[in-house]
Length: 403
Image 1 (cartoon, rainbow, N blue to C red):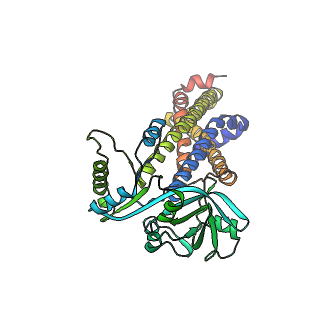
Image 2: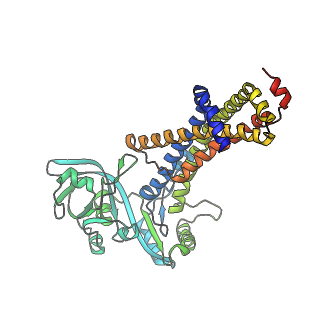
Image 3: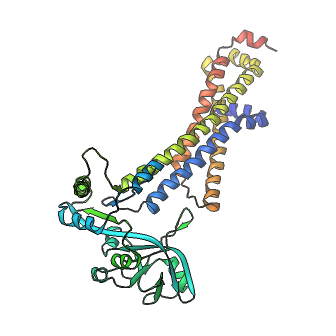
């Protein structure tokens, strides 16, 4: 405690110099806290809101996950997935449990003199709701009979309801989709927005209704849940892969003429993106911390010179080398700790401001705060080690004679 009191007294003696010394650490820790909070918040948000595919479900699709221009051009050249492919999988896949089909496009939806453009419109089989765990606020989802007979029915999202009917109950009312009248039988639970883009501007209708009224040329997305759950996911994918490759007469060494998407694959893509951003910002933050550490080392060396006579007096009355070393090391650590504390406060404030002003979620955890303070303390200990060692090695007689 005596060492800490002595160190605090030395820091208070030169308040402005101490504060300016802290700037590098403050900026570094502030950047680390704010950036990691945004990345952690996005990771959680993406996992909960965007990648809603169940871990025991995979999708067979024409495009899949596109990460480059070359992949997009290759996907465009692929043959579309048709109902014949779906029937082949249904009849030949022994490990498949549930098989759902979906197709989508953007359509104009009207009711009376009100209309909405660009509504995400899905045509799907009746079991897609179960496979994707779709939640309904009111009404019901599609039935197999409605899909078989191309019934003119629809399930709408909450934004479509609010734009066309306000707060009125939409169940049983009519809407017109690209000139086709549909009866509303269900209302999807509100999902909110993802990065500022609404997830409630959507609607569902039977797959047969979509294809009958809007054409059959669009490629289908096939949702497959293995009979034995996650444990059978890979074997089920392999079986489906063999079925579809054989239908397309794909050579053994050629790539699949389709794509398979899983929840894990989606999360891996996002992790690669966020890891790159994290590495870049960590590098930038690291530069600030290195600069801060150099400044602390420099100031502590100056402090050793300024306090040479004090060091001599302390050694003359019995202070050991390790006592002097500990004193200056504690000063450097305290200096860096306070910089880290200010940086944490600013970083948390910035992350909260980002969450309020922009459609970017943030997540600040106690572990993140502890890590920020830990980095600051480590920087101070590293930066203060050499000046403390130099102070401890001063000869008492020479130090007393120093003016």
